[in-house]
Amino acid sequence: MTASPLRAERGFMKLSGAARLLVGANFLTGVAVVALLAVGTISRVAPPPVSPSTSGSRSVGGLPEAATPAQPRPPDLPPPEPLPEPGRGAAPDRAEAANRTRRLVSEVALACELSMSTHEEFPPSGAGDDVNEGAESLLAALFTGGYLGRVVRDAPRGDTDGDGKSEILDFFGNPLVYFRNDRYDVPGRYRISGRDIVAVPQLSVRTGEYHARDFVMVWSAGPDGENENGRGDDITSWHIRD
Image (cartoon, rainbow, N blue to C red; front, side, top):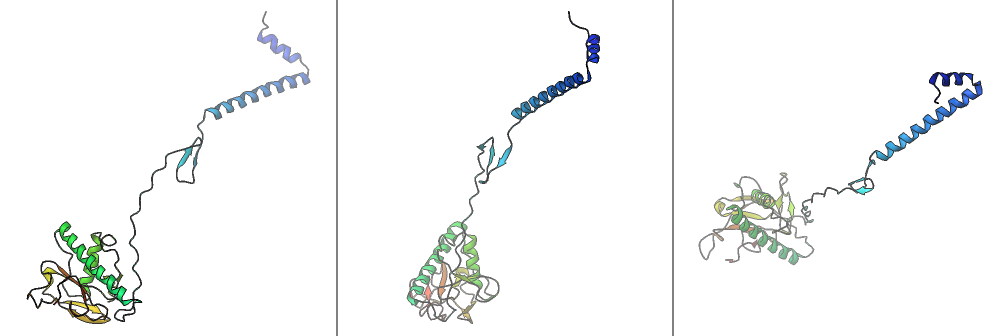
């Protein structure tokens, strides 16, 4: 027969003080055990923390997540090479400088031809009002069109007139002279070997017409640093010389 709650309470009251303390301690111990079991159950159910990885990805539960692939960085243009002081002919090997200038002039002419094929026009050569305007416009067009480093592989650059605009230079330190075919009749102002000069496209003595009349004219003042409008030791983009 089961004892009633009233009898159980009366029995507890009849216990001595020490016995009451022992019963109370056992009750508190039971509560603590239950609480610990509950905490252990929660810790088993809770998801593992997300920890950062040094590689830029995250790991969950010890397993790495797939990292977002890094975006490729566009290639940087190589810095321009140091050049001799314009017009002083201080290149260590003048013959090599002349060869590299010939290659540069040929590559610039090819880039102009590609520009015509792609954009249906040659790079602009400016109105002829500012010093080195043709060389500055040419460099800007080659850069915008993506030809530097791809077609024109070796293109020295500098600001020889100090106006804050870079020009494309030959390997003797002077800006290339550049004219588009619709500007052959407009002289261009240039600073060659530290002196301001006027560059003028010349007519061919043989034909009486402009060299490359349907194309562009590009030339370098050459090893002597003296502009001769495509004659003398000037290095030109056209191949038939007078």
